[in-house]
Every structure is written in C-alpha cells, then in structure tokens.
Length: 280
Image (cartoon, rainbow, N blue to C red; front, side, top):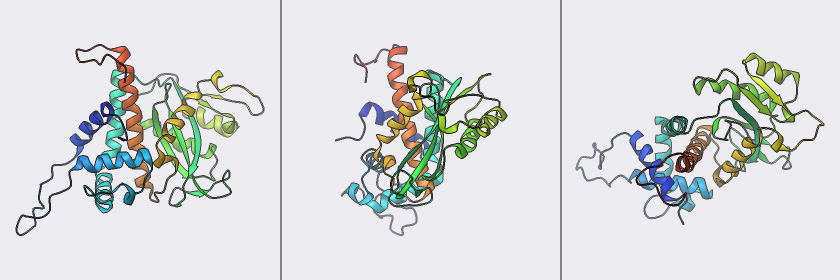
C-alpha cells in the first residue's frame, strides 16, 4: 500500500529532485570505475515517506532495493544540504502565491507526543507517568497551514515557548498591518500579553475558568493541524534522538500538508485543461 497517493507524491518528488545536486552513477574515485551503482534517490525518498506515514523502523522498511544504512546516510546527506527545509519553504511560497496565506489570524498551541527513545527534544511527560515525551509548539495561519514550530521536552509549559515561536514570524515575510494571535487559556497571563504587545500583535486569549466551545474562536485550526501531523506515525511516536533529524521529518510533513491543501483548494478555485473530473 503506498504511503501517499500518486497525485501528491509526484509533485513532491519533482520539486525535491530539482533541489538535489548532480551525482555520478559510479563513484569517481574508484580505480576501475566499476563500483556498485548508487541507489536511486527516488527509492530512498519513497522509503522516507513510508517511514513518516507508517512509523516503521529503518530495519523494518529496508529491503533488497535499499538498506537501512543507505536510508540513514542519504537522510543525513540531505539534511546537511538543507533540502528538507528548502522543500517546506518552497511549498509555503507556492501555497501563498496560488491560494494565499491567511496571516491576519494566526493560532498557536502546544502538543505532547511520545518519545520512547528519549533524545535532545525529550523530557518527562506530565500526562504519561513521566515517560519520555516531546512538546511541540505549533504556529499556523488562518486555514491551518503550519508556519513554524519549536520543539522541547514534554515537561515544558506552553507559555515559555511562545516567544521563540513568535520569533519565527520574521522568516515568513511581510505581515499584514494587524495580526491577531489566538491562544487557549494556558497562555492567559500578563507575561503573555506583554510579549504579544511587544511584537506589535494583537492577542485573543481564552480566559481561565470560562468555558467556551473551541468553535467560538479561530483557534480550532491549530487543533486540526495537530491532528494532521499526528496522522504521520513517525511524529506521533518519535524514536529519533537528534533534533536535526526530527526537524527534517517535520519539514517533510509540513510540505506534504501544504501541497495537499494547495492541490485540493486549487481544484475549486481554478480551471485547466487537464483538470481531473473528481476532486482528489
């Protein structure tokens, strides 16, 4: 069973392949020029997609076409080149040009997931008997497209992660004149309000002790995006220990979410000759 449908993986791979450097079929330093052929990048890319979607291990996804060592080595090579981060940036730019990012309203929230292997972004989880877990502070735009994140241990509170998450707004580009930040009652404090005001933003924060349905605000989009991310089992139960590797998988997942939303929205917003008769 494929990890993702072809209408989604093909454009992802086309852009990913355009970012890869040119490689020789055989290693140029081999004295007889007959070294084993390099495993095609498309095979390794598909393996990473399967790992991200199904949450399987490197040994579990390896087969006769590609070994676990090759997957790890190629993954580290692409991380060093910054290709995963570039893919996410290009996906966001494409979505902004064709559909448009709704930056007038942004929402933020924290989400705790399991991290059985520990690692640089893990800490004792307060909701799982102090087992190792990871907290991700997520920022999304008005529809729910992920804009930025900050990773920390599960024992960190949401509010101290607000400032480093808001700092990533500078990487997005020009913002509208008025931007409203929607937060839940966990951020209800004078420190949070001062931090938001210091950034020149408006804050809409749920009050502690006042019950209100989540649909009453624009905050439900971040909850939906957390569900989209948790559909990738590699992120819901993270066994990676290095932060750079975790960031790479998050960048790949965010690119998938952006491209998937772009294709589905473009189907209703635009018409073209090869437009499919049914929405993907």
